[in-house]
Image 1 (spheres, protein in one colour):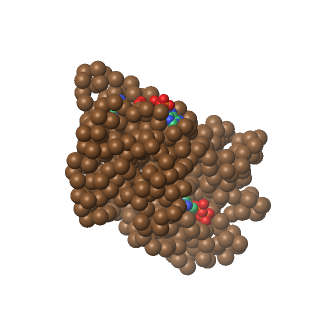
Image 2 (image 1 turned 30 degrees about the vertical axis):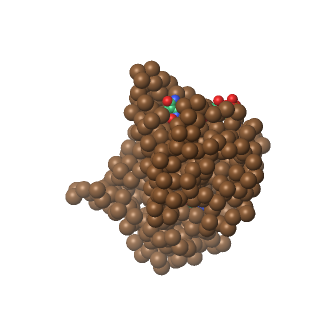
Image 3 (image 1 turned 90 degrees about the horizontal axis):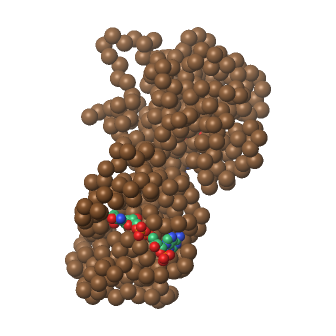
Length: 499
Ligand SMILES: NC(=O)C1=CN([C@@H]2O[C@H](COP(=O)(O)OP(=O)(O)OC[C@H]3O[C@@H](n4cnc5c(N)ncnc54)[C@H](OP(=O)(O)O)[C@@H]3O)[C@@H](O)[C@H]2O)[C@@H](O)CC1
Ligand SMILES: Nc1ncnc2c1ncn2[C@@H]1O[C@H](COP(=O)(O)OP(=O)(O)O)[C@@H](O)[C@H]1O
Ligand SMILES: [K+]
């Protein structure tokens, strides 16, 4: 599991080691040098004779970057260093000088040179920053972003962020000013919340954590991300005494004459993962579902979890009446349920954490609006975690907020952040597939969720992980339709569960 801790917790964990004389910065610098050398080898086929530009801020983040630059210079890399703060760490400046690196003033000429290097190392600010970039750091980042515009995309340098992309909200993932987006972030000691929370997470690229030996056991995880083994631990495997009812039945109310496909997609994704899917819908939708999945059972009855809403519009009164009835029944029995799309309109005033809402940013804004909050989609996109938390507080539900990075939290649970998919997943119907997978995850662990409703959040995050991985598998780097993702779900789960 990737665990992000807040800046103050990292600083507190560093303190005793620094007091004991443990050379944390040397470890950070070695890891940075190795990572950049690896990237240079990947990009250029060699390290000697390549070029790196280092952006050097006032604090230890700038020192990390400059010392890594000095190490790379000793390995035959042509390194330029550009001042991006009011001062430069003494020891790092001396080490750089000894390797022949001179610190350049942040003028247009230096930034144009940086924009033509093989790698740019962003050491403007790290966890000691307060607020968005200002002063020399801001000028350098704005100037470099402009200089990069003049370079054809394939020739632009790879950007490596030291600890965090400078200027992001380290603890809250906000982006309140210019930030140089990174291809990779080499982060020290532990991940930071801003590396996992959108929108900042979208500027961090791949995240590598450098082990500094920090004791973080007492630091509350701010955000967590499930990895393959975590998903495998959460997902049950049927045993020899299981039958379809013990594995779990998912009841689905989805699709309408306008959107029959959503029902097909949601049931396609769920059917292989559960003991049985039972389906409620108008005849034409039932026909479409059964044509693709004869194993789906038509009609009402007992289920271990319910999925309501995919393909049902916010003004489809007739379908919403059925959704309301099923949802009220599920809530009254304390059963897990997934509430998606139009069904969010008929969510009871208060529900428990076993009910998982799956809005995208627009739907979350609408949900909050219906509860008296004046929120636009853009507000949710700018501060997704704050709005997700608000929705949890107002409804009592577990909320899964869909996006390039998907966030999940319930009342009192850890915040989960999953980014397992690909941008090719931004395609109509992908959300219906996700709803099917979340419903299945709740159905197969229904008893556990009823006993411990807080489990709905990690299960929904695990479902998002399976969905994202299925998209990647189906895509292989190219275009996909949502049906491809649904068809890849079963094989993806098999791969996740394989040791
Ligand atoms: N401690 C350790 O052993 C280890 C620490 N490590 C590393 O240290 C980093 C933390 O270092 P840090 O504490 O020196 O803070 P840091 O992020 O470099 O910036 C602070 C300076 O930046 C400035 N500044 C502030 N806000 C700004 C803004 N908005 N916009 C622009 N500038 C701004 C301000 O200076 P001034 O304004 O005076 O110019 C301030 O002094 C950490 O991220 C990791 O990389 C690793 O090597 C592991 C071992
Ligand atoms: N850029 C992206 N990168 C990765 N995943 C994405 C991206 N955009 C959307 N997704 C995922 O695709 C799905 C889209 O769901 P949704 O917005 O409900 O679409 P639809 O209503 O068409 O099914 C969600 O699971 C979301 O996380
Ligand atoms: K940085």
